[in-house]
Amino acid sequence: MLQTLADNQTIGINSSVTWTYSPNSFQKLFLHVEDADWDDGKLTVQIGSQTICNGASLFGLRALTMLQSGVESDISGTNGYVALDFGSHQCTHNQNLYVTIQASGEMTATDVSCIVNTPGENFPVKLTEYSDSTFTSDANLMAVCYDAAKAAIDDDTTRVDVRNIIESSSPSVTSANSYFKSLTKTENRSDMFGILNINEVPMKTTYNYTPNVMDRIITVEALGSTNAQVQQAKTSQQVAQFAVGK
Image (cartoon, rainbow, N blue to C red; front, side, top):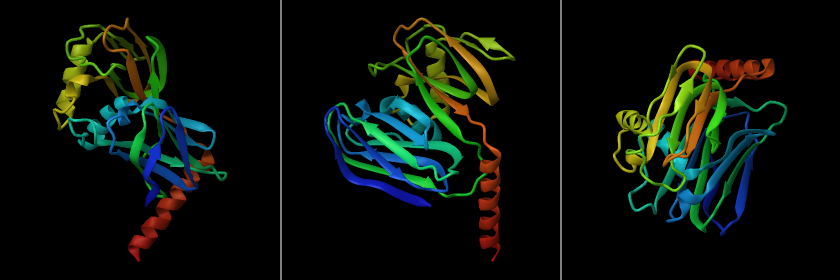
């Protein structure tokens, strides 16, 4: 089900707004802003007390939007759009969904919506932005990179050491940008993002590099589920199948 959290709302300079909803489950988040300063903002998403997006830059989250939906904002930067797939989070024990946007400059005409209560078998994921040059990502599925100052990274030859339990590699940021371009459907701002790795299954993955132009990495990680969450997901799916069958 599509649920609206905010329509045409203004977020003041250096302030934040939090919207909340009480779903049975949460799947996707959509953000649309008609403002030139929109991608200076930061996004935090929580399910109850668990953070599943840790104040990541809206500019950096453009990369995931371009990969997942193939849609990108117009080149002027005044019409911002972010679409994020969080898998499927089961909200047990009366957990609420909290979506917070922290603005740098004023963000006008802000629309926020989400997909909730949609049965599915996708495991839940979380998004984590790192400014650290050395860190470990548990249950890693993917990592995208960019420059916090919004510079193009296609000529950054810095090598990033990427290791998991099976293999290791040291791709350059330039190569990460080529990988990103190969998987996106738009050339708009494609020089500004890169893909460092995609794991077919969740694996603990370490990253180590010396920042040059690129200085931010956003990881996508799989999360575990409790027995109660698994049972709720199965029940929701059975109910949906029964309704379709009728």
